[in-house]
Length: 324
Ligand SMILES: [Fe+2]
Image (tube, rainbow, N blue to C red; front, side):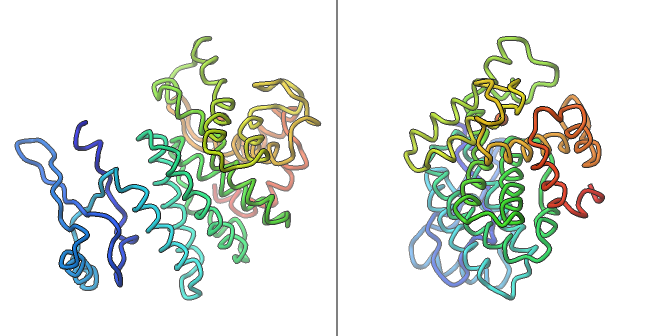
């Protein structure tokens, strides 16, 4: 494997200042035009003391990397640090939201772009719990997290955005905690099945041919298979993954179910999914403004949605609709 594919840049915010790191740190060098990664600090005590000192003095300027074999350890440490920040009242809410977004994004990117095993998704549970806590603490509601959403249309940023919308929606509607958790997980995992579809198809510039379309339309079922393999999440989460492309008028896929057969949580996820896709740029079109997206959803596509959910969703977006 090419060394570039084995190492990931790490976020230094997730390094421990007061304790040892759980994984080795690497530096990247370029020798004769080739990237090489050299170990900067191992887990040995003397190395760890050096890292802590440099972190304290703010002298750790270079980009650092971790090896992919250590990814579960890296994410576990990141999640622990996140937990600490989330419960620290001195950290402003939007800094908390920014950090949560960053860990979630790295986590989902690891899964989609590097074919990470699903063990990495186990951390998503912890991160979503922290996300719920932060969203529910905020009196600004969705506005506190909105500014951090990255709109670049990558499947991993889209997944985190949808999870954020779902959690904010559930919180605003005062749904019970269990449903908010299910919605967050469903939002984060709704497109997991796309990880098995070639990226050339997912990010294709032009329209898809019949075979490619068939391929893409298989992703809700593939997503359910991935979750079944994990044996960690229950039926309601899998239902969101399976039903997020069903339409209330029966024109969706994979089953062509009608509104009464589509769970409430799946209908919510669908609104978040379509809205985020529309306000993000694609290779073949510019991003729509929030107003354009919402009017498309409530007029041209009105039969496919649960309109009451769209109404609540608009209230949740609040002033962010005008800001775009
Ligand atoms: Fe999807």
